[in-house]
Amino acid sequence: MDHFLYRNGALHAEDVALADIAATVGTPFYCYSTATLTRHYHLFTEALSPLPHMVCFAIKSLSNLAVLKTLGDLGAGMDVVSGGEYLRAKAAGVPGSRIVFSGVGKTREEMRLALGGGIRQFNVESEPEMRALSEVASSMGVIAPITVRVNPDVDARTHEKIATGKKENKFGIPIARASEVYAEAARLPGLEVIGIDVHIGSQLTELEPFEQAYLKVADLTHRLRAEGHDIRRLDLGGGLGIPYERSNSAPPLPLEYGALIKRTVGDLGCEIEIEPGRLISGNAGILVSRVIYVKEGEGRDFLILDAAMNDLVRPSMYGAHHDIVPVVEPEPAIEAQPYDVVGPVCETGDTFAKARPLPPLAEGDLVAFRSAGAYGAVMASEYNTRPLIPEVLVKGDHFAVIRARPTFDEILNRDTIPEWL
Ligand SMILES: *Cc1c(COP(=O)(O)O)cnc(C)c1O
Image (tube, rainbow, N blue to C red):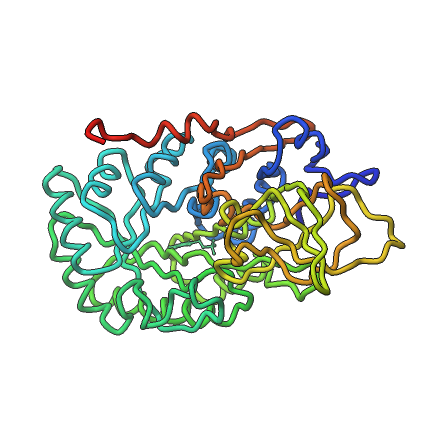
């Protein structure tokens, strides 16, 4: 459920008409709903209660400071995968004690940054990383709390680019080698082993792969405890999928996911951590764009929008589907017609949808891409020197620009022409 609904024939974000935002900030733009972000965060906390737990929002899915502050103020932790994301979490007012550092290639500078500013734990992904972290922590006279990310060799049955839990993926250490790796971690002077971490992929639409992975984590918890490790926290990753197509069957709900967690690892006496990104941010955001031209083609019409692949890359990168809806509600009786929905970028890959049935649209009409909150703005680029598009946050009947569109001067001034040229 989200808060982008038609009211009196006009698509709204909560109580604000999107056409009003478009008139103020121009198109294209991203728009996020505070009520939807809040609701999704609470779905997870409710699903995990009464287990001791922390829901750490995966910043990489949507990293605007205003969004992070919205969630942080509710008590959310943050899952970061770079020094930059760590600084975002801190800038949004989230204390280090609620920040988890994930990622396969943390640098020593990033480790120093997080150890200096405070950190809940590092999710370590390899032995070389473990040794580096121990060295950095020792040199600073501190101890780094860690979990080790294990790779359970489970098929997440999702898009190959976002499956992370098979043994051929670059993530984590093979679960079969866990005893050895944990033994080394325990010997390293700068580390304190506190738990286990697992994350098998993104946009999972079934619970089965989670179940397989979490059962393996439960086994491993017993084994590592028997080997003398004080396993007291389990980080179970993110990855729960969202319905991108309203018409399709729905992925499992957070409540069902929570029940699965309780069933598989709930009686181990561990604090549970999860790192959802997409399920919190995905349906909390839309991308609003204007039709520049309708071009008649052979056997199809092209809807040429002012948004392009550089603004929302998921369709061209993952072949992803986004529902597209007109901002003015169509009459119920109106007959849909197929459009190829494209952007202005000079690549055939700049296609959002082929033969998409839509009500008849004309130049100047506004459309909205639904479910664009996650992996939307954060993956945008300025390809074709198209300025990064603004982000807007709505709360009730008010809205604010939370990232402004850069001017062309700002863009051009980032380049320098050497004086010898
Ligand atoms: C990407 C990622 C997440 C979030 O995944 P979602 O599918 O957005 O929930 C969580 N943890 C780690 C380690 C990740 O890499």
